[in-house]
Length: 273
Length: 285
Image (cartoon, rainbow over all chains, first blue to last red; front, side):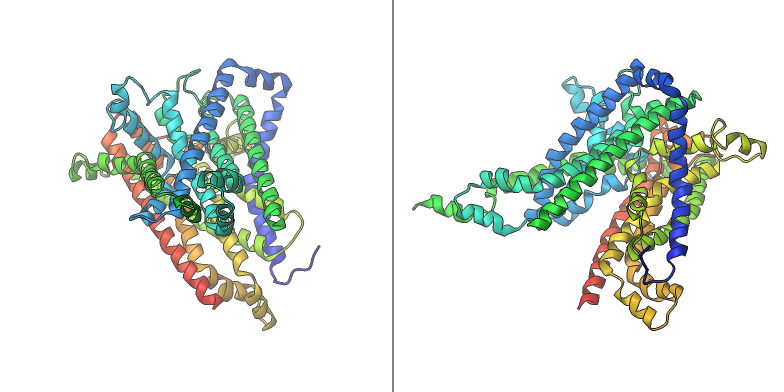
């Protein structure tokens, strides 16, 4: 073990390990073991149940869609907030964090009221015959609300750090603005977009509070995986809940690994330059 | 050479029409997606005037939910602050094998679904959980009771203090701490007189952020609480009940309390950022 300069190493490490084990590690182990206890047959039965499969399709599909939508909107927003000056810019920038700060239950009832048939926005959708609240479209909107700030806040600092010289060089070499954007700026932003998208996707996948109010929660139609876990728990079906939970945990792990991988590759990439 | 070459010279600037339309799109995005839901909370809360708004808070169940949330925050925030500082100190001041695992564990609650945050404690302390039968024998209730709510909240809000402090302490380095050490200060003195003053604004913001998260947590708490009115309902859970029973304006009145807290947190965030930037600048010159 390396020698530490500052005192207190054993005390603080000990406390840290104790707390993390008690609050995070032990409970997560319980989940994995409970899911493992189910055995292969029950595990497959739980995961291949048509209702579960429908929920997985809905959760993954809508989260993916919402993430792509957030990536587009987020890129535009981040670009505007860094590159352009306009009155109220500071306010616009501060407002981006609202979905982070607003409790999910509050966001949930607010979005539901907005998009209900009588709501501020819902009535216009109603006019053209589109139902938003209690349909997959409503879930999609809630997921965009959740994932948008992740994209903006990941891409924004990278746009701020973009070296102007490269854009100038491209311009002097005769590149058009669109060419510069597609060939030079977008590739430089790509890793941060990927990371922001992955973070938003991961969050959208596990989101519960802001979705359950607007979702309608009909099995096979608007039932997301986190809600299905809660339903299983309410039926005291701990094993199925644990299996679904473990599957979600695995997804979170994979997303975290991807983020780490992109971050590391990106770090070495900038370091070489 | 014509006007075309001029266009190339200013090619690092976006054309004005594009600028204005992008700014317009951005303002629309933010208004529709972010601002409208927040505004609606306050509008619905105060739509029937101030009287009905206040009446919501006279309801004993509502009062109990507010008290419950208050007690959870009173315990969860100091615990996570103390251990958050400890985690940040360990992660930034020492090198040791397995540090990456420690950092990953700190990050984990952010990427895990809140439902899973509740589920893991049910599987551990619930009736059919690992310690369930033992707890039952000794008449200790954790799930569907206050301790469960506290545990789930601690898990969800675990990362906020540590994650706010780690980049800050990394950027500040430890030269001053080492200087104090050579002058004979002990570990506690170093922390109290050197490190704590250096991180105070970051820490203040971290505590406020952690508090807002604690009071607003819904998914995890919903799984472990059992929704027993007057016993295990926190503010967010009571909002859900009011909403389901079509007491819309009461639900929004209670929600506006949390929304106001969220906005206050954002304001403090921007102030804390300015202050810590100023502190950094003044210490670097």
